[in-house]
Length: 386
Image (tube, rainbow, N blue to C red):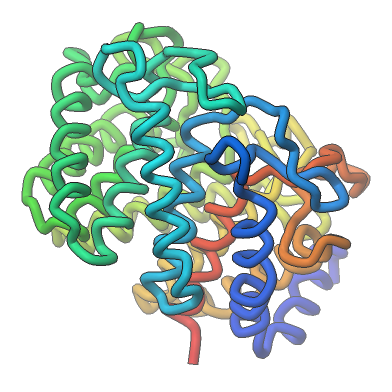
């Protein structure tokens, strides 16, 4: 048996209660850690990262997308009953983000980067950021249907629909627009539109999601080669050579399942092709690497944490669809996430990236990964939990 095959077999043998184990890790350690050390008590706002010993880095500028991701995490944890106090933390984070990042210069939309004191460092209106702001708002709105939060969703969608829509399809990179065009903001807008529909039941979110599914089918995804492109020209023609991020291919598997759920549009064929293609880009540990080419070759043998969470969600989506063996594969992927990334000296934190030899490349603990990890564990518990 190959080294990769042995690793997969061990994962399956040891994965009996991995879902419960990681849920406990989230509830007992990660959520309390980031609630306590991840919030700046002096200036407000979530910190961008902790140092290797788990102390808050209060000096690093704060990306607005990370503020939104942390709001999502605490609102989601409260919604699940994992961490009831997360509701207040999420609202506190939302109030900070609205006060500091929304229209601070009199122009519509949210700025890109804040200084630790809450002043604006970069006024760019970034589409990727706005996708996460919508995700945060939708998740907070699901807590208690606050009319003020619903109004914020409506105002944000007015900006996205009028300022970020592209005449060439999909959405611009931001305001001001830039090149190249990327699939990543489109993918996260699809995620946010699904969440928006779940929160509000507004059919306009279904329509917006449908437009992005059309863009995915016609331009982003090459069905013949089975790969998802990352970078595009203005007209959505692919920039060669095509860069493939297997983590994004896995992420689309999960998102397409969500799109199917809210619209009834079948996506099983695309999901199967994307997942099969993503699995070509694994190293000897069974983990996804960071980048490959369209021929299935590994281009960057480094491996970040977040692609491992997305392959978990992909297998969970397939398990929910009744695909044979997908539940076992999801548990095995959870085991790899735990073994390689979550066994950090600071309980409730993680390693962000390794090189091809298994050496850690990032000396800090980035807050941005919490969204990926918590979502993967939540999805696993929802579908695979007892």
